[in-house]
Length: 111
Image 1: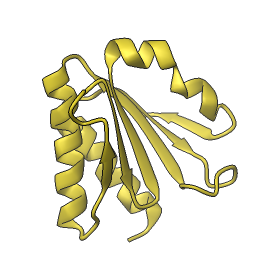
Image 2 (image 1 turned 30 degrees about the vertical axis):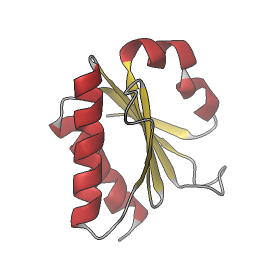
Image 3 (image 1 turned 90 degrees about the vertical axis):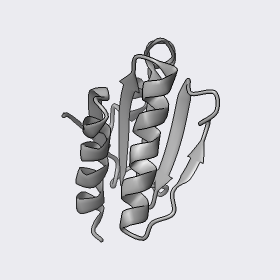
């Protein structure tokens, strides 16, 4: 599967669980770790976990076993899905860490 296709599937997975302020960053030219980052947030621990659950489910449907960190705490869940890394935050943590500033050199597209 192409990175762009996987990116779109992951964006749709986030959107299906009503993630807010979904942003994608194309870092193919600046990162050797991944091609894309997605940053989004939920408004409760339960919603943050539901977003991560949907990401895992969609990835598994396509034969990809994602690596997930931070699920139990549900404040900042990182989902590594092949060439797409998704950061699912609880709103206060997203505001505090402001990861968007780290990817200023990448192509930023609001979804």
